[in-house]
Image 1 (cartoon, each protein chain N blue to C red):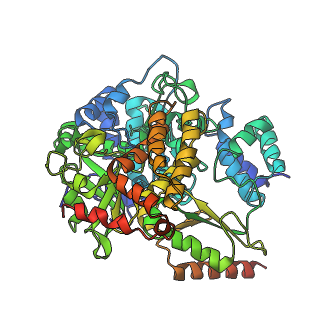
Image 2: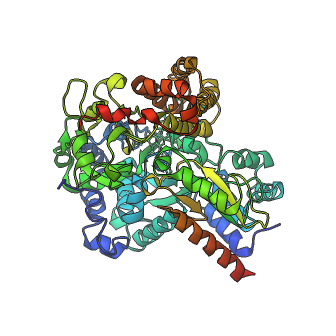
Image 3: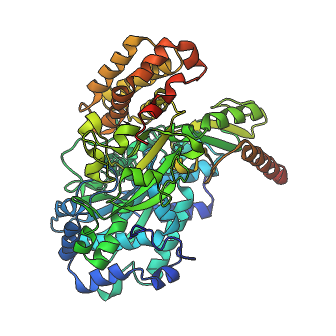
Length: 165
Length: 449
Ligand SMILES: Cc1cc2nc3c(=O)[nH]c(=O)nc-3n(C[C@H](O)[C@H](O)[C@H](O)COP(=O)(O)O)c2cc1C
Ligand code: SF4
Ligand code: FES
């Protein structure tokens, strides 16, 4: 397991943002890179690789990886639907949206479809309360969700996967 | 129309680019500060402005800057808090997304005042697309000589770096943020020492909210005294309010701190009233951590005066009959909404976000969540309400960081003002289970309307 030369350059750039000897600060950004590069989750192997790359003890990496909610410690589907369920979103119908996704895909929060395409996860406030209900998909938010928009989103993801195969 | 100091240019076509931003008068504060003022004079203007921290605590910014230790030969840091994770709050996102150069300009001017040659923006990890917007703005500022070495020939060097978090509300607490920026778990530190003395990598550090730093730009451009003329008393200037819930027009509004809550909710310039022809039941006016208020106490203080959208106005009456400005996350509930259910989601949020260091917070948030879920689903007992009260009381004030208080206050206020709604869930378990909130309408009767 290793990053490509291009990603290694990115790691070096990240490390250069901190003073001499403070390279541990690069751990959180580098874990983001690693999760993206190595299958969308952080396996023990991936964490050990990051530890050796940044010259940290493996435990320093595990401690951090297990603290932050954006790191997946188990494999997830190709498309991860992270639906906000906190109060302000609830006031505008997030419960119904979560239920609808469950009905459409047959997965409860925390589960992945049998074909490995979709994972449903409930998350806490993502700073989009005024655009509720909402979900995060990759690096972007999908806001003002309706059942129709959820349908379109599932379609969009399925097409994208089909195009890649 | 209220005056806008931060968002007045946010909708100018192309304002995200350096060229347009500069044409609209951007980066004047950097020129003025670096060419005509000493760092201490910049701090002095911020003191005069009366600006208070916009992250939630409302601490006077100039005073905070004045506390920064300046030992010889030790670097100092400005860290901008863009973690924005308090439910109901989405104002910093708006500012960064639509007018990113305003934040970058504010950081350069503030870094000059504080002597920070290397400043960091710590942004919540989920705001991934905003990182690209800010990086672009930083690169443009650098290409135009406003960042890097010897800015505008002043001899001042400054770099700005962005650090993305990875999902943790607690990293908005300033010492947890510093731990996270050092590459560790976001466990808050015991204070003292305060960051102003020992912050990032043990060096003197100022942590300020995005909106606070952006407000430095108009303060330097127009002078602190001019800024202080806006608002009422110690609530000077403008404030960004992110309004959400059951209102007609959700969104981010910049208000002068001299309008009433009633005007903010019902006038067309702001929220436009309650959506779907419903009635106002309750509101959490400053982000999920501050006390909820029923409609009558929201619109009028206990003394019967019109409640104002200022730090003092929202806090009028203390925790008995008032609330707080907090982060400006304004959550409005209509008469269909269930306070027990809403409070349950907040308790779940705090349990999820507790870092686990202090037993009262770690255990207490879990208990509160469980009891509230039982009540919400019709499985609660009358004694649970008193138990909840007891638990929140034991958390408050007994923890390392204020997350414990933040978890306790919403529960306390919900019971204080909506006890009969909690009791209804016990006496009507079947209806509660079916989420048929018979009593949810009772707030309407109290509406000052
Ligand atoms: C649990 C918790 C979460 C916080 N989250 C944020 C946040 O997301 N953004 C923020 O600016 N301040 C947040 N704060 C407040 C910061 O600790 C700190 O007071 C603030 O960044 C100081 O900046 P200001 O003086 O400009 O407001 C939080 C505090 C606590 C206790
Ligand atoms: S109060 Fe809660 S979040 Fe804050 S340090 Fe203690 S356990 Fe952690
Ligand atoms: S409550 Fe869902 S984004 Fe804030």
